[in-house]
Image 1 (cartoon, rainbow, N blue to C red):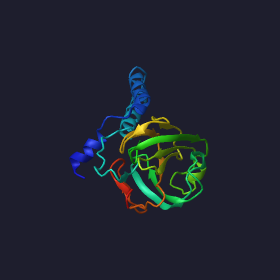
Image 2 (cartoon, rainbow, N blue to C red):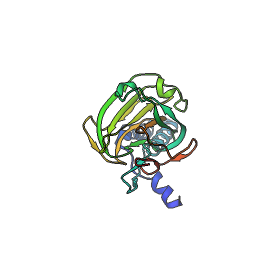
Image 3 (cartoon, rainbow, N blue to C red):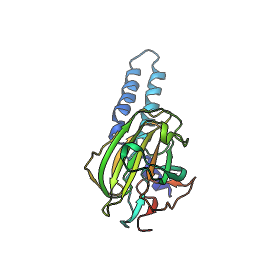
Image 4 (cartoon, helix red, strand yellow):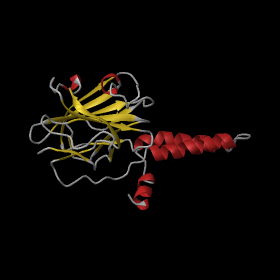
Length: 225
């Protein structure tokens, strides 16, 4: 990635979910200007606002033209690739399928994107713990928001937003019945998290543990493969 591309990502406009945090930092910084020895307060406000501008950045992404491609639903790095049963609240059955788990640090872009085109058939939110999202048991124990997608060929897929150690808020912008396309923004998880993708039965993942993901662009699998 070139320096220009890197700067374009860092300086991209923030997601709307960051507006209250950025505004709060600015307000604290301004208030400090009117307080005796308020330089410390002003500095903290500026630092917090700048951090939120960086954390909530929402760069444009270009998904591949191949309609059979399944793209990463999040930025971050792959922490596990194994067979697992989708969250029971989605009603996708008891059979294991390939799951790719992506861990997002506080330095990653946290906007979630649709892995492929289809229809959102179910959204289920489940309260839970706030364990370190890089741990494998976070998929089962942590607070999560799970979505089931029905593809054009009738197969199904699941993508799960999982809260992390310091994440306390999962936002989802789509609804049951929403028609979505690959790479489309569908939500954000605030301050460190994880996103799991359950592939359709018979579809193999094309990524490995440790690989870096670019949400909406990195190809995780091919539906016809």
